[in-house]
Image (cartoon, rainbow, N blue to C red; front, side, top):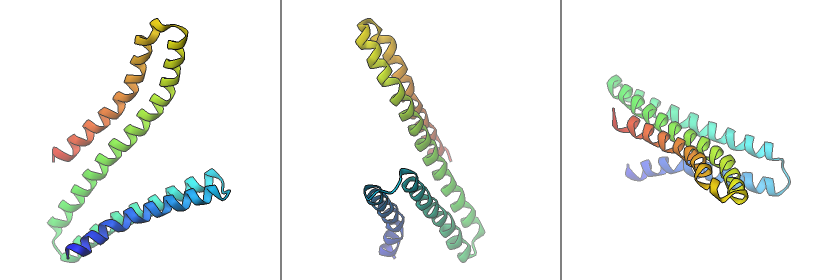
Length: 142
């Protein structure tokens, strides 16, 4: 039973890694970036749909409605925590990606501007920390 559970846990990871490798190979062969990104998004959506449906079906098969509700609530809390962390890290990356070059440019023109410029970079990184704190609260406050 343990081996079967490990295999079932590994299938989505292997599928997503394989789709990433296929997307990179397709891009190297000349496919457009738009097609490769759409392929990645569609493979993620397929894995997400399968992961959402399978636990619900497994809990419904046992006939225990309370266990099914608890399992769904736990799963949705983990999905919420993952979304909070993931989206805040993406936002923080975009903010730092835009603020850091500007800070470097401002510092190269005027070394006294380093203190002011680095504050904007740190504010972008703070977004990711807030997302991580929200996800910790979601996981442990149930």
